[in-house]
Length: 304
Image 1 (cartoon, helix red, strand yellow):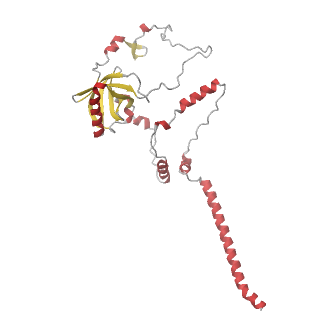
Image 2 (image 1 turned 120 degrees about the vertical axis):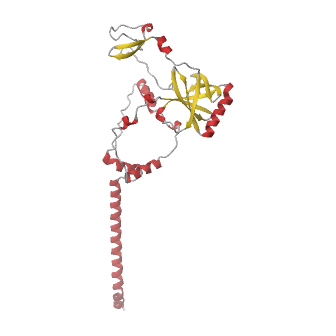
Image 3 (image 1 turned 180 degrees about the vertical axis):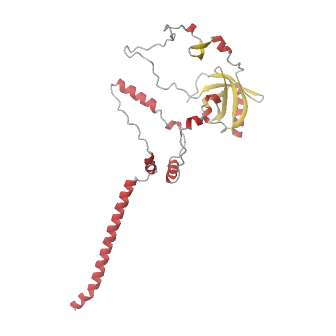
């Protein structure tokens, strides 16, 4: 993916007494996604958004729109634009490296948005010094600066020929995992089911390659738009079948490549029947052989 032509932020990075000019470029983009406008179903015209007074219903002009913090039902502290601007922290446009840490020290739930951090021509050597030093020591860096009107904490990691700067969520922005997982019962899986699960995981072991994964939602939207233009109706997809608790073991066996139990029993029964038939034929053949052996001398005496 090519780096965007325009930097999102320009400033400096400082570690110890070393300072280098740098720039941030967005590492991800949603510009390729299918986007929609809101239109009037009756006329087909695009709908224009308009702010109206919640009580009078009358339109409110842009110059009369201000920020308000609700302190009670329908009671607000009004903040003027210049007051909000004054609350923005002062910035020296510098990413101040606070500490170097192990790359695995930060839970990835705190990761917000990645950016490519690139050097200005005047700071290439100092930038390379930081990059190579971090790579040799196998560490990441924690830095802080004002980005997009807010004080942000940034994680710096080596990546290819440069550095990736990932903004981090603050602690108050990350929900507790305990609250999310509290309804999950304490179930311990063991025995054959756990062995089969480990076997399937081993079979599916691989590496991540972004090119191998498609955005199915975008593809489905494109297919839907194409069908609508051609006057066609897309068939409805059946929902996936959920594995019930009493079906888990059988599903695991099938996932591991084992035959379904019913099929296995049928095959085992068939094999056993074949074995019994073979044994019967063998016994009968032995019996015939013994009879023939006993009758042979008598036949020879009569012949003489």
